[in-house]
Structure formats: structure tokens, C-alpha cells
Image (cartoon, rainbow, N blue to C red; front, side):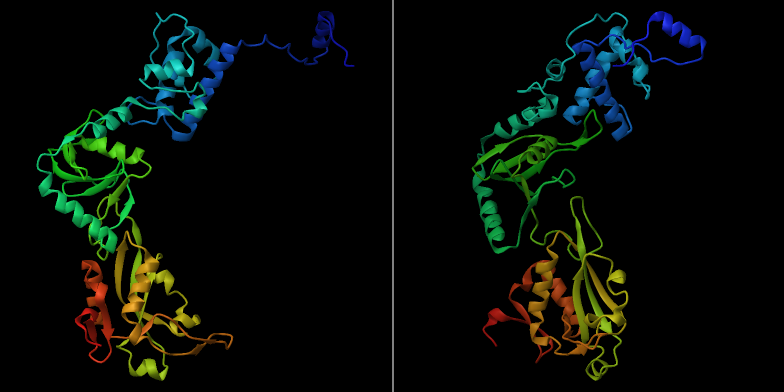
Length: 400
């Protein structure tokens, strides 16, 4: 068992230049431990985000909670003294009230109550039922609907939207805050289709964000005059909240994008520099049509080593940017359109193994351009390439 030194022993050891272990400080109270733990949570937030927690209904609930907690620690002298030695980020330098009296209201439930937040649990790490006042207001505005007196003129729009969803002309996609809410757009919120029939003048909120009053028509014959940001919040809080795309799914094949569009890739059209007889004799007609999610330059790097590029270098003759579209489905559609012109050729790879390359077609470039245009406007559905006329033909006209 280790020997315990007396005060006299400590004095003698000190004279000998021997450092002795400091006696343990008195144990902290549970309240002090909570205050320190809460301050350390604030410090971790600052380390992660690079700034002190701030107030605001647009802020995450934890950030808002930390902001209130930090204010309390600054105001209460006993709290400031307790964590002052830990303040490596200068968080206590904010204004403090010298008139503040000690209080026990530093627990999370009390702080949440000051934020106007309902919490059905006392554990801050389990805020499953927290509802900020802004969210409650948004939900109330969605629910606060009235009968649409002129619904007869909107009903055909909803019927047409449903048909276009069923035929694939339109799709539903997860809603994002960046997606534009504007007049004429359709959404799904609370299990109902919603149509933006009118949009008032844009204004700025206190937080510098744009907002506007909307007239929203729902497919059950009701309407609501809600704020744009209220609809945004309702859509984001709704797990099934969706936006309904335009018939062309946005600018699919242009270099122009709008907020909410996500780059999906590129259609590329290549010509081969191969000296194979079939290719050399038809160089202006033999094209590889593919879709990639990387840069075309990277896709064709080392083409002369790959059988898919006919073991030869290639020339890029056309590209079309894609947005908000399934690349695999689009590629399959293009290959279906030009199936009758698919190039039947076999080539050996670097190891002498026979390979039948895909995506090579004997088709004029202007017909590929036409096919892309028809994909854009949705008219490609019944078209296929006719090798006898070197043109696209509508299969619904009854001709073979």
C-alpha cells in the first residue's frame, strides 16, 4: 500500500526540490458539472462551425439552445467564474448583466421554453418531438385552408398533371430549399397536390431572406394564402413532400440551369479514327452515343487502349448536358431509338480476346440532334430510326 505523506514530509520534500502531487480539489456539485458540460457543448459547436451559436428561427434547434445557454453563462457571475479557465475561444467576452441573480433555470427544458419550443423529453440529445414556433406556424398555415370558390377552373389542371405523372412526362422529386417556388409550379404536401396559382411581390424578412404571399390551390378543392417560406418549411418537414417536375424536366440539354437543378451528366457523340474498313468507309456516319457522369475528356482518355472505343482514338463531335434525369434510362432510350442502326462489329482487345463494342451506330449526326430535340420536348415516345430513309419515323402512323 502506498505511503501517505504528512505536511511535514511535504515540507522536507519541497526543500529537496521534489515536486509532490497537488491535493485533489473539492468535488463539484451536480449543478456545476451540468454547467461545465453545457459550456463544453457550446465550445464543440464553435470548433465545428467557426462562430458562436446564434439566435433565429431559421437556425437549428441545438444552435438556438446553445445561444440561450451561452447568454445565461455570461450573465451569471457564478457560471462565468466556473468556466472562465476553460474559455479558450473567448466566448465569455460578450456583454453580461451585473444585476443577474443566481438561478437554477439552466436546464435544457427551461431554456427550450424560452425559445417557445415544446419538448416532450428532458434529454437534449433526444429532441425527437421539438417543434419550433416557426414550424408550428407553417403547419398551421398549411392546415388553415378554405374552400376554393373557383376550383372548377383548376380541376382540369390537376387531372392533366395526374395523366402526365402516369405517362412519365412529369416526375416527382424530393423538395429542396433551393428549388424555386413560383407561379405555375406544382408540389405535393400533406399528401395532396398543390398548385401555385398566384404569387405576390417579393419582400425581405428580418433575416434578409426573400418571401412572398402565395395563393395555393389544393386538389381537394381548398386553398390557402400562405407565405412562400411557410410552404418551403412545410415541404421540408414532410417526409413525403415532393416537387412535380415540368414536362421537359427542366433544361435537360442546355448549359442553362435554374435553382434546384442537379447536374446528371452528359450525352456524348464520338467519331472513331480507327482504320477498320467498315469505319473508314463510313467515317461521317459511324457514331458512338453514350452517357457519362464524368467529363467527356476523362471518359475518352486512353481510347486507343479500350475495345469499347474500337482500340483507336476518337473525336468528340457533339455533347449535351443533362439535368435531373436518370442517365441509365436515357441511355437505354437512345439505344432503343437507334437499335436498327446498331453497328455489328467485333474487335480484339489488347490480349487478343474478341469483344463486341456497344453504343456504335451507323446514323447521321443531324438525326442524333433531332432525337435529342424530341427527347427534350417529349415527342420522342413513338419514334425510332428508319435506316431506309436515314430519318426518324413515328411508329404510331401504322407503317412498318
